[in-house]
Length: 323
Figure: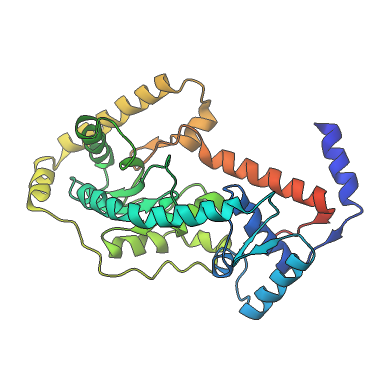
């Protein structure tokens, strides 16, 4: 490993730097190459880590990168070099499937919003980016009432187990926060991308408050527009309000804590291979947050991104500038 690192450093001593703009454009491709996902020009601009770049400058950068064979262009899509163009058809097929799947996602989102203590429901994961394949789930990011997050989560999980036979296909409720803790703790390109692509299904006022609480994403993705949603329902029902009133006070808080402790105990028994650091990142469990990502997708994506960057620099004997 040390020899490989030294070899990389020696090679990079004799490389040339790409311009800052070209480096930033390449980094967009490197990120989406982790998912084998070609990009349209407008998408490249949305995910650029630099602001104030005009269309003329972006076009010039893309033309240069294509002319130097750093990037390929085919039928409107830009991407890093591939052995064929099958990933374009894969994307088109996944985009079409996502449009159809959104109808189902809206129905389940409305159902989730009826559960006690749920305040905002968002579509996350691949569907929120307009793509889904046959093996993908519908992922939900949920904001709850403070000190009742684990009650809300437990009720949703029980519903999934009892009425959906524990299927996650249309009901993967894997990330919860509460309204008093809207700032996401993990701050990196992966979480920034996941955050800006969330699609709110109800309570737009709270969703925009959530956005305002996470201005740190502008360091990574300053061009992405998250303010183009409208006419979303609030998702309130009288039965929901009545149920919530039944658990006002100390008993409700005790029950919430009990559900949290039982869930953490179960997860630690179920995933003994996760060390403390991995458990904290992928299964973070506190009164105000619940993550259920046992495969630690965040870590895998960031590691793959770094690997892609190193390989690109080696292949082309280039050095990509930092943002």
